[in-house]
Image (cartoon, rainbow, N blue to C red; front, side, top):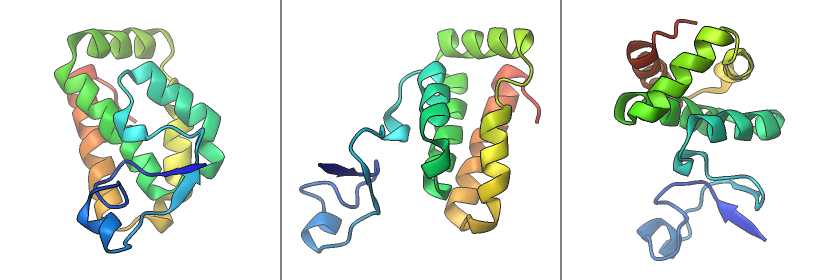
Length: 127
């Protein structure tokens, strides 16, 4: 069984689904990155699926990390603590981002930049 990436396109009941416009399919075990609820879950999902991630997946990871750092004090504190103890904690995600960057379109590039900026502003992280 497969599921679509977290997007209005491809979800049952959406206009995109009804018109047959679908996002690329991913293995059912892969999470919908944009729906992850903790920074730890994002980093664990990246560790598990990094070799299969494309630009949309990578930008979703950065977007979620930025959103969590901005909106969730407990997540912001967790990220600050992890980055203070392990400054290279985000290096694997940065490496994946650099590897795939030539394949990024405008939207994933903008989402990644916004997520990184939000994360840096809220947590003090600087790549």
